[in-house]
Structures are given as structure tokens and as C-alpha cells.
Length: 144
Image (tube, rainbow, N blue to C red; front, side, top):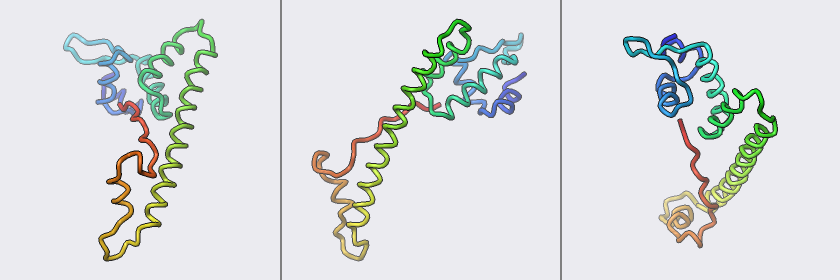
């Protein structure tokens, strides 16, 4: 299969597939003219990666999950540990988002939203970090 076929079947953009190849998550064969030649197992890996990424697993988690998937001697406890750590991260992010929403809702309620220039939203954004009501920023997850 060529990259267009595998992109259509896996639901992943060709750019993402090329990226996964660049970082060693998939290793398609190369034809004599240099074109990628994807096998059924490459398609399966790409579908696996697409599903894992849709659940928010990091690239490194995906690498570890793929390694465990291919290891018939694996312990399911190793897989569960990765999933539990990711679930803890999701729970933490949800707590942060709830606090962020609470803070922003408070600021929106405090703003008159009229013709006057006074605005508690801007005042809070301009205040030194230790004086703001906003929660700490959520760390960025890797994207691909």
C-alpha cells in the first residue's frame, strides 16, 4: 500500500504517518524508486497509534504501548501502569480546567461590561502572578 492508501484506511493524515516514520514508530518498506510500501502490519500499527493518540497518550506512551503490544511475554500490569498514569494526568487536567473556569467565571461576573474603562478581567491579567486568582498553567502535551 502507498501512503495515500494507508492514510485513508488508518484515518491518519499522510503528514502524521511520515512523522511516525521519522521517529521510528513505523518502518515501511521502500520500493526501488524510493516510495514507501506499507504492509498490513504497518496499517495495524498506524490504526493502533491513531486510537492511542485519540485517547491522549503521549508519543512516548504510544512507543511503550506498541512495544508491549508486540511483546507476547508482556505483563498486563505494565500496560495498566501506563494507562493509570495517563488517567491520573487526565484527572489532574480536569481539576485544573474546573479551577480555571471558576476563576474566569468570577472575573466575568465582576466585570460590568459597560462603557467605563475599569475592567477586573484586565486588572487580573496584568497583576503579578502571586496576586492573581488564576490557577497555574496546564503543561502542554506533545502533539503530532
